[in-house]
Image (tube, rainbow, N blue to C red; front, side, top):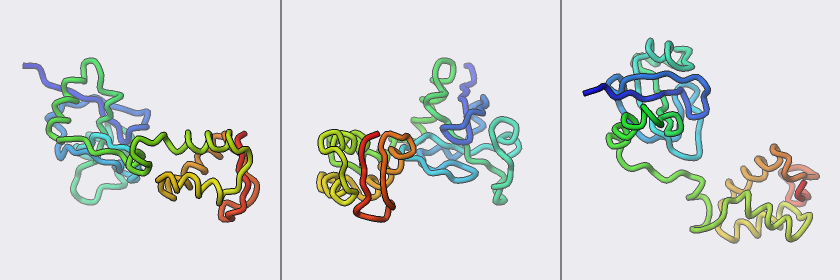
Length: 177
């Protein structure tokens, strides 16, 4: 029987990856916090632990976060585990059990559109709006206030909306770019 292998990274968005046998991975679980710098993510990815020295060879691992247990937390992203790695990935998924729902879907009304879509739809319909009025419409539909705030910041960074005034002011003006 051939040994199953998977592709690992330090976090799902990392560009440095390595190949490892599944037998070298322990503590497989679904998580939304990366190893090392402990970066949060909105959805869940498959994670496990490998020897620190091996991690320093295979993935972006400085060794600075070794708290004495001599293991590094690594990510086993689905997107990197296709083709020859798919069988190993499926095996580890079975060990981890059912994948939890991500926070993005739980922070919006059931069956609701993504908050980015709803905000852009509302701005298309209404034109320029105050932050307070837009927040009331979106939050009254069941979106969480934190989701609204994060979405406004995301849309600003993407230059899909423009704002005039302070983000802490309910009278801040928001419109589509």
